[in-house]
Image 1 (tube, rainbow, N blue to C red):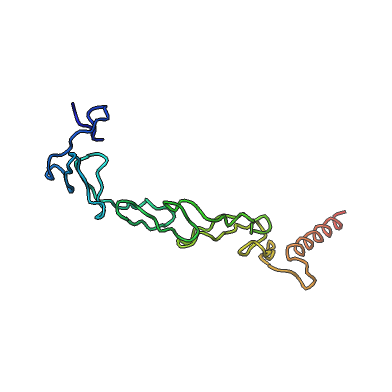
Image 2: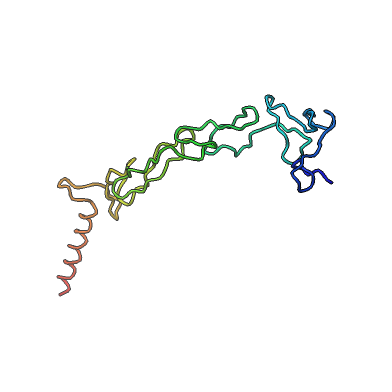
Length: 177
């Protein structure tokens, strides 16, 4: 019979002897039952691929999501999550900053991911004619000649320019007929 990497004879559940003495276990010790043991307090655990080898537990670069910081506690990996994230790997968000739709005037709300320390903020993408953090401000109208703003009576520059064009066209038509 052959001892599998899971520590059993072939497909039976009967455990096989992996080691006879400590020399048979890489970075571990051989216990009285013929199995290798690892020093978990030092961060070692039994390899999944080779039951005769202990391996150091280490964080991988992508273990924690959303800029969470990975650390090793014994043989377990742990993530320290940033503000607004939660879960074993910081993959979940604690709040939805767009839930109450803070964007005005049909602005589109998304989670602001620009601050790697805080994921509780929102960002608005404003539609045409609006600006501001929450699209609450109307943009000044700009006419074809690049003039901005309103006249002293509150008429927009674009309307004044359009009215001037209409009057010019009417004058031309009157002279033709």
